Amino acid sequence: MSETEWVLRQLRDSLSTLAASSHHQSEHIRQLGDVSVDELGLEFDDIAPAALAITGPGELTSDQREALAALDAQLARMSGSEHSELWTVEALDSAVEWRRVRELAQEALRRLDNQASPP
Image 1 (tube, rainbow, N blue to C red):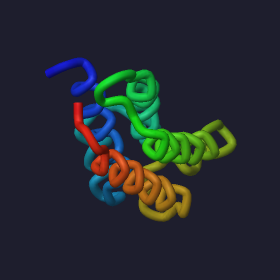
Image 2: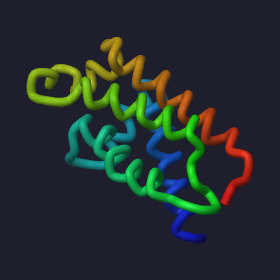
Image 3: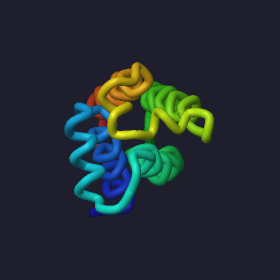
Image 4: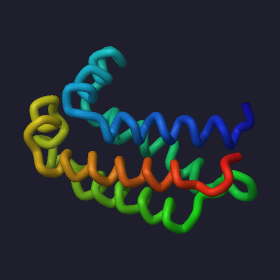
């Protein structure tokens, strides 16, 4: 597997988790061990820059970049100590902000899946 393929796989995995139901997200957090809900955002934040840096085969289209930027902006709006109530297992199920994250992640996945020429 090439580095580009690995990065895009990790991006898809992160987006899939962000697009998943609150139950699945809670289970993902539980399986990771002693981490908090913010790990969902951190996983995306760790891999998105690498995906955006790909050039040549596998390079993201402008539509794909826009989808990632929209998701990143939503997560940024939720960040900070003034929004700590959003980073709980309960909020995954009840907060409108997390519903928006799921929608944006689903759209980003849709755009990635419509990539004309995979690496």
